[in-house]
Amino acid sequence: MSKLWGGCFTEATSSSLAELNCSLPVDSRLFAEDIDGSKAYAQALSKAGIITDLECQNILTGIEVVRYEWIEGLIKFLESDEDVHTVNERRLTELIGDAGQKLHTGRSRNDQVVTDMKLWMRKGIRETLSEFEKTISAGISLAEKYKQVIMPGYTHLQRAQAVLFPHWVMSHMTALKEDAKRFLDLKKRSNILPLGSGAIAGNPLNIDREFLAEKLGFDGVTSNSMHAVGDRDFVIDFIYCASMTSTHLSRLSEDLILYATKEFNFVRISDKFSTGSSLMPQKRNPDSLELVRGISGIIFGNLSGIMMTVKGTPSTYNKDLQYDKKFLFDSFDQLKKVLDITAGVLSTLSVNGEVMEAALSSDMLATDWAYYLVRKGVPFRTAHHTIGQVVASGEKKQVKITDLSLPDLRNICDKFDEDLFTHASDFRKNIEQYKATGGTSSVTVKKQLVEMKEFLREL
Ligand code: ARG
Image (cartoon, rainbow, N blue to C red):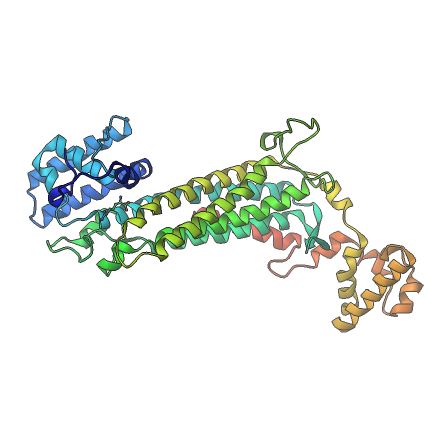
């Protein structure tokens, strides 16, 4: 069987071009979406009177046979097949004859492929969101399991203030929630049907595009055919959302890799998600998290890859765009893997609460001591300076600030009292002060958990 477009050609395609041009190894993944799109299109053709009811019926039945052949691995590719669209049309025509040849009337692979991609992406986002659900749920369980644990919080990787361990967990889950929202927005925004745009100029055959949109579950139809066939913004958006997510997973990994070192010893990554060294018998390496961190580079590479590809193309469809699928599918696959691995790591993580609490050091009380003075009427700037002097005095005497005597402290500021030691030096009591929404008090952390669970119901 000859190609679908060979009419004006006198020479055969070079074998090296045929090989480069063939996208089947990648776009076979669209077979089901391509079939769904064709079924809707056949019905639109019939509605417009371009094919008869019988021809439409034959197409609908025949294309289901093609679907069955894909699913069962019975579909055979011919040398003349270029992509999933040509395979489906060629096989349909082999099965049902002439009616198959009418299916493509007024349609182009340009509007067809972008429709298939949007259909696929819709499903891809649904699957991605269910991976988010798993990972965030694992984070919630971890936070709840160790809800009392206090840990040193870091900025610049320097000891900053004491926080609840679940507050740290939820900081990462909040980033993932924002990522999930980005995917939800994209799902909504991109759900506009390109089919009926033809190759570039639109459809001249009275095809009812609103009917097509309804059949295929789209919320509307694209408004400019030239834009529609060349538009890959939704692919870039997907890969951007995936890049952001993998960036967040990479940062979480980085925290955990550090906390799992013997120097920190805050957490232990389960054997299930660690590997050993072929040389050093004592090693337990956090490979799972290093791979998560590494994959973020791959996904980000896909983002620059697709952007570089699209930026060079003139308007409408150009064959460069065929590579969009490689970037999209790979980003989807990689993201799914890293969300899954992260869920596994979180749900099997052991937390050394005692080690975390033992790592709290009295200098981490400095901010709360400043607030102590503020509560006694000292302006914050003065209080900050005063506690700075307290810290310096401790350093000079080589003692912790909590080991300085009250008279020593009073020499610096006469507002200090016994309650500095009984109240303002207790990490747990200090944590409970941070009650403003978003803070680390137990009440506000609980609120975060409740809200996160509510959000998961939206996914
Ligand atoms: N396989 C092509 C792709 O994925 C389908 C569109 C081909 N269009 C064309 N005008 N040759 O981009």
